[in-house]
Image 1: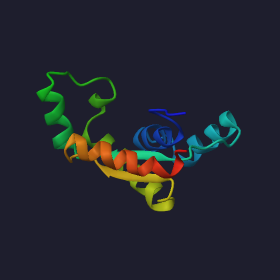
Image 2 (image 1 turned 180 degrees about the horizontal axis):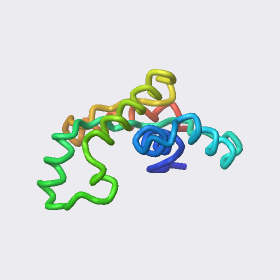
Image 3 (image 1 turned 90 degrees about the vertical axis):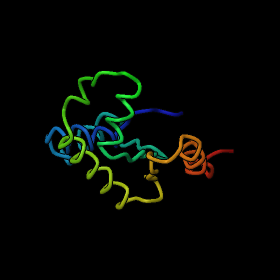
Image 4 (image 1 turned 135 degrees about the horizontal axis):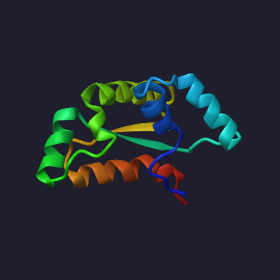
Length: 116
């Protein structure tokens, strides 16, 4: 199964970014999922300036989450960095500032060992 959001995003966005507490959010998720975790998380790391520039190039307004501001994303990004450092086999960090083909290739490579 492939998901675009799961426990790691809750830990980063709600636990760290919204300051609800990473451990508190982790505990709620452990209860809700019965301890089920993802086999692999792909963390697409992108700096705030590049993120904003790309959104502007597409002519998109900031959505509710993006309106939280750079500090929110720096905090959430730091939480993702901590998750990746704590479990680098499961949480793979990809430089999303690279060319789209390179990001795709890195993502495929990051899950290759999980594929039949």
